[in-house]
Image (cartoon, rainbow, N blue to C red; front, side, top):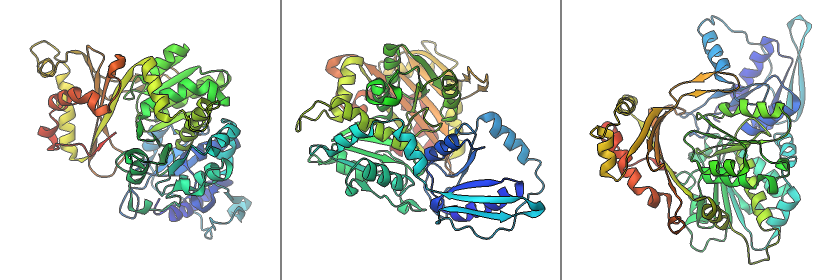
Length: 513
C-alpha cells in the first residue's frame, strides 16, 4: 500500500513507546495477510497489524487501512474491535518514541535502548519462509511438481501487482517448478500499477483474455490473487470456476488430494450469500455445516473449536473469492490456488499425456453428481449512499407482506416465481454466544431459488449494493451454459422488485461475478 513505509516507521515508534519489547516486520514491509496469520500462530505472537485496504485500489488518493489480528492469527472479533472503538472516544494523548529510521530491506535485528533501561528490538524477517513451511505441512509438493512438469499442463498466475508476487515466485516457481513466465505482474507496486487488485472477471482482464476467452489458449489453469493475498480466482481453459463451486470441489477432494486432511473433514463453513453447492458435499460427507455472516472473522471461532478438539478438520469459503482452511485464520489466496493444483494432481495421477483431466472436467462431473447451483453476484459500486439506504429500506419494508396480492408476490408471479419467505439474516455464534444483526436481506422462493441483498462498505467512496442470485438445477440436460443463462429470469425478477434503476439510476451493475 502507498504510505506503507511511512506508516511502519510510525507504528514502530509508537510500539516502542507503549512498552513492546519486540516487533517483527516483513522484509521491505511486505507480508501477505495469510502469511501474517501463519507467523502469529507459528511464533506464538501477541498479535499483528496488517496495513491493507483489501482488494480496493491503491495510491496516494486511494484507500489505506489498518487491521488488527489476534493471537490466534485471525481478525479481531467484534468484541475486541468494539472495545477498541469505545477506547478511541476517550484518548486525549498518545506516546511516540524518537527512533532512527529502520532499514526495512535488511534482514536481521536492530535493538534500541529505551528510557528506563529497557530495550526495543525490531526484527526484519523473510516474508515467505514461515508461510512456505505452513503450506508444505498442508500439501504434497512432490505430487504437484509432477503435475507442473507435464508437457500437456500449463499455468498462468496473475499477482495483480499485489503482495503475492514474491510468494508466487518463491513457491510456484522455485519450489514447485513452474516456469518463470507462468507468473505475471509479480512485482508489488504501491498503486498496483494503476489497476484494481480484485481477482474477478472484470479486474483481471489480461488473465481472463489469455485463459478464458482465447479459443486457442495454451493455458490449462489460470489463477489470480488480490492486493493483500487473501482472495483468489480460478480459471480453466475457457472455463470460469465460481468461488462457490471452487469451495465445494476443494472440500469434496480434500481427504484424497491434500495430506493435511487425510483423516477427513469435520466441518465446512460458508458465508450466508455463498451458494449451497458445498452443502451437497457436507451432506455426503456427514460433517457439520455452518452458515455465517460475510467476514472471515466469523469462521475463526469454528476453526478454534475444532482445533481444540484435535486435528485439522475445517474448510471455509465466501462467494467473494475467499477460500481457506484452519492452517491459518485468514482466507488464503495462494492456498486455494495450490489446493486446486493438488486436486488436479490427484485427478491426473494415472492419466497419460494428452489425456489431461481438466478443470472443466472436474467441475462438470461435480454438477452431474450433485446438480448445479447457478449463481452470480451483481455489484453496484459507488452508489449514492442515501439512494442505497433508501433501496434497502424499501426491500426490508416489503418483506412484511408476502400475501398473494402484495407487491412481492405480484412481481414474482409475473416472472414465473413464488415467494416462500423473506427475512433479515441475523447470526448467533454457537461458540462465543455473540449476536450479529442485520447481515443481509434474504428473499427465498418456493423452488429453492433465492436473492440476497447487502450493503458493503470497505471502499472509501459511496456505497456498494451487492445482489446475490442463486437457482438450483438438478436436470442433467440443463446443467450447461453460463451463470447468466441459468439465472436470466431470476435476475429480471430481482431487479424489478428491488427497484434498482428507480432508486439508483443504474441500468447495469459495475461488476458481475
